[in-house]
Amino acid sequence: MILGSVVHGAEALLMLLTYVAVVAVIASEKVDRLYVILAGALATIVLSQVLHFSSVPNLLRYIDLDVLGLIAAVSIISWFLADCGIVKLAASVLERLRSPVLVVQVLALISGLVSIFLENVSTVLLIAPTALAVCSRLGIDSVPTLILIAVASNMAGSATLVGDPPAAITASYLNLGFGDFIVYDGRPSMFFMTLIPMIVAIGTIPIYVRIAGKALRLNNAPTAGTEEPVRKGYILAVVTALTAKVVLLTFRKELGLSLSASALPPAIALLLAYGRGRFTRIMKEGIDLRLLAFLASMFIMVGGLSESGAIALVAEWFSASAGGSLAATAMLIVLVSVLVSAFVDNVPYVAAMLPAVVIVANSLSGGRTATISLAWALLIGATLGGNITYIGASANYAAVRILEGSGRRVTFARFVRIGLPFTAVSVGTALAMYYPLWLAP
Image 1: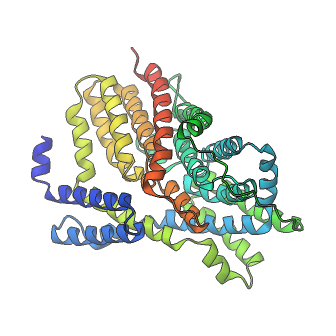
Image 2 (image 1 turned 120 degrees about the horizontal axis):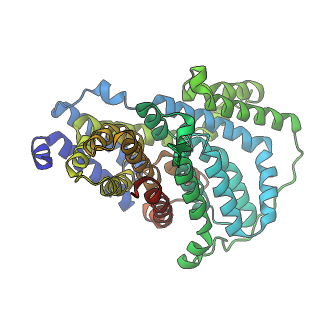
Image 3 (image 1 turned 180 degrees about the horizontal axis):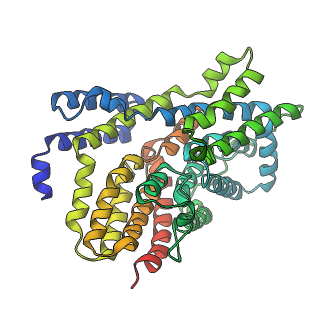
């Protein structure tokens, strides 16, 4: 069945090969990753025309302008956070901890907790300025710090239906409410199966540091924080704008707002109030055009994978591989989702897999409970699996771009060396909870 689909699906096969080639070149670090992904997007468009599996306008519709607008708006707010001085105040509090490992753990924990209610890229963009300031003042290596902040935000993203797009898609498709992600049918749900693994993974940071044999503290001496007058009015305005963004994002569905429409008003208000005469500087320093271009190109490539049927092949394989065992099928979904989400953005993957999950659950005659059980398996694998590489989740690449903007280049291999152990710990912990709660007889 699967072989026949591949034989008759040259479009899917060529798109898969193109995507694998792009990932391989990015991993080689021999060519600027932005140029590689731009070339991949162009190749996707050319293939769609030659093989007639999609149109250019249709592929361009996969570019999520709402997400890009959100990133741009949050970037502006983050710039004002750094400019108003609140970042230095937060850094001065954190630096009292002194221990580099403890500082990184606290920052990662804050990131994970915030991402329960905020989109992951927003979380990274908001916490990064404080993290960079703390790293500079204490002489801590900012690379693992920001990577772990991104990883933690991804881990807890599906704890609620408002924290991450895959969770929202699942909730909409299966008609799940906010409380269902906490407890469903008397059983602990995704809230516990992502939050607890995140906390456990953060707790292993000291072990990782010892095994890796590298201290988090750099050889260079810590930099002294410069004393600047506190502008309380400015800080209050920025905090108010940030709070407004959080509230609007939290209740955006009730208010009928998109992601970008929730974040743009506070950003525009700050620009009008405190950006006069500095607009060009704010746009240049605050908005990372390379990040937006990378994500837009990634959206096009994922669109090609979806339109060509490549993602559907994975869903078809799950359906064909369901051998009548709910536990075996769930474990297979988790494993494959971890592997796929390491290299493909988890949003279109989850959207494509949900219909297959329902079909498989129905074939197992498990009813609604089996469907929800397999949906949790899908979210566990897709949410936690995206942390292996920086192309598996937008928040990861955002962290990489922030680091590069501060003068620290992150290789593909170094990200994997950091992301892979924490993915293994978090997935292992989640499965240790998931199996007895949702699969055991």
